[in-house]
Length: 275
Picture 1 (cartoon, rainbow, N blue to C red):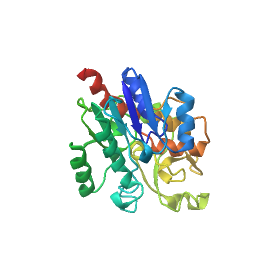
Picture 2: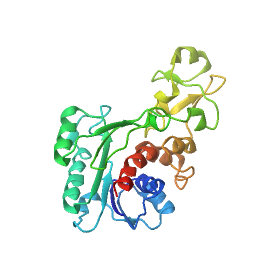
Picture 3: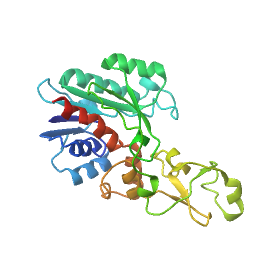
Picture 4: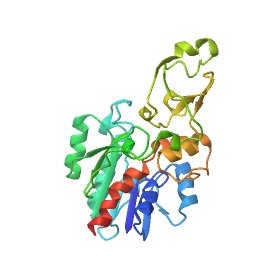
């Protein structure tokens, strides 16, 4: 399998291919984040890194699989809504351009849930409608994403065979924390800060290390502590220790940006079954 990975990040796509047992003859990655590239090279020295996606070109004989998760910030409901006018949003068109150039047998694009008009533009450009998959079918993390692909996707699991405690170093209590509570946490205000106990699976890993939902409350209910990188790796289906070549903050950021590997593996399994 010859693979072109756009917006490659730390090469979660390569991990997913390995999990599927798909032999990779060539894996070419377009990525500009130096920290993500450091992690990728440390784990897969054979990956060919080719830099900025806008400078990448392909011919229709080079690749069997094209995939990538184009930047989501301009499409996200949490963003500024710039969509295709944003510097990041317009990078989708590089995915479209390279899909046309490469003419690879298979393609896969991932992005966040977005306004239906933006979703329709992408669907028309790629010629397929997206499939919505929540990572919580595979790991105890709520992470809804759209997947545009021509790979046949097998039936999704109806229930997960693991629980959150399997992924964490210690038992935790999870709460819905008011925005000010993280920075102003103290014994005298702790009762006011707690609104409701939430199901642990309701949280979503984000790139922001100070986001309250990436934290847990200690047993004494006196201190908020963020999830550790090895726990985030497990929750994204990344091998434990995979990201330990950069700082904790960088590890958290790239894991928040990354793919949930078991979801990608499930989709890519359709390549093996289609052969």
